[in-house]
Image (cartoon, rainbow, N blue to C red):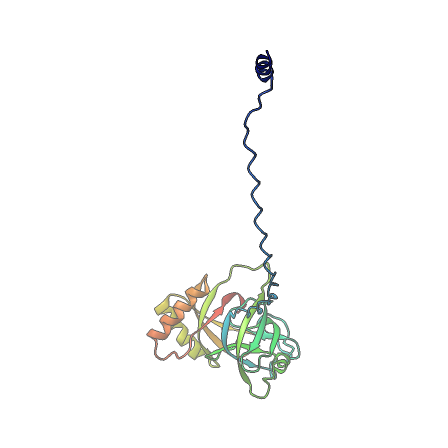
Length: 235
């Protein structure tokens, strides 16, 4: 009887499942120290760009006897104003003249025509020449930067000046020769240079076209030393 009771009580015990223990959580990797922050190098501003030179050559200046006379634009020339003469720029153009030797600059307004000397690109008034210290030397190596041109302009026309004469007969003789060879030539007398007759050849819609004509004339006519492109609407 005792053995049977023991057997019966063993059958009534609750059986428990043999569940393995959960795996241990992995250890977190130690944090690596943050890299020290390096301050960005201070930004260095770029140097200002040099102004673009539209033309480089010699500048000269003029005063008497032109002071008080009508300029090519019709404006009375005042040598103490900041003005200049140029062969092809439109009247009213604003130009910065930069002396390449002493680094001085002056801003001028174009109101006259010239200079008609080989290698020279601009004729400054007395005041403008004084501003860049070229009164004594008389000429200076310069670059020209065009700041502005008048908004409303008639279509430009360009020609080639091949001579200037005090004697009209000599001017007329050259004009006829140029007309026979190149198709179009005329005489011009301007109020700013009384008694001087200029011979102009051709009439081109672009400055490049007039420059090509000037080169052709120089190569075909050895007697013509200088041939300058000029703006026709100014003469």
